[in-house]
Image (cartoon, rainbow, N blue to C red; front, side):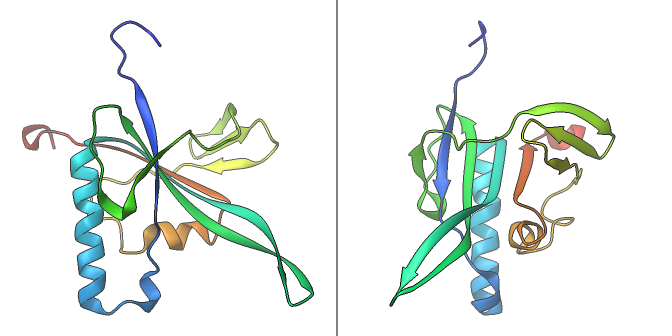
Length: 150
């Protein structure tokens, strides 16, 4: 860690399926999500699909299970979404930028870049579940900025 650099820690978060919630319940979860971002102030939210093997009454099958993580400053006290401190998840490293919207990763896969401003007005509810259905991993970098600079 470089001098003056803040230590970062990872939390594993419990995901919430928006499709099974009522409108009022969705509003509460979205409020908790906004509070999570406000508490952390800056960091990374990572949604990734992990392949798991299951056996059920003699049948074998693989399934992809979504997992959610938050990386933020060490002094953050996170209590939303049953946050639990964990070691960082294993991830492929960025090899190079292919174009302004695409990264090449060390495992041979590609990553797409999306820039969004003004949460929550520009990010729809359930955005992580929507994006994770299309990709194996979604990372959202966020940072709170002063109203005078917004």
